[in-house]
Image (cartoon, rainbow, N blue to C red; front, side, top):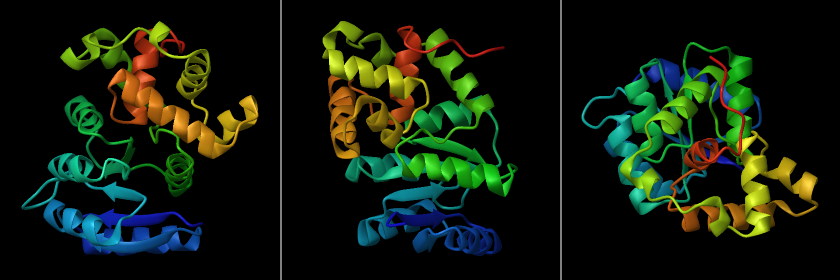
Length: 219
């Protein structure tokens, strides 16, 4: 795979184990960091495509680092990888610009599946966390969400892509359904995010849930 990854975690043994797992499955790990400040420096130097970011770290935590990195490099995808299952951390991570939220307690197979989703343009969220996120965004929209433009502000093609994205399809899958290239799908998604004033794919999916473009989560 051509995807370049940066691993950020303050536990050296975990970083090394994760690097071995990813390399064995075809990913290129171009660097590691042990706190948020190191992550920002590494992101500036290495320009990764995807960062796997721990939350609880000394000196500078992962949520702060995510905001700093996204402010400078909005195209870099960041997925949180953490032991924390609290709603506060989950919601703050997505609002800070994270594209996903993975738990260290999940199996290696599930972890690799969700990383692959992130690599293909999907939102890397286990089903239970995705349900909690969608419920929260639908129930208590943020001030920014209250200013969302209505779906009618999108072109018919953009609305079609938004609906498919909200159903969990990745960029290549959407391209297959609509007979468009992945590059074209990425362009449209970027336009959708700019038009709706959203920062990442997870927020796009939450927006779709608020406007009835995806079935409400069970529970």
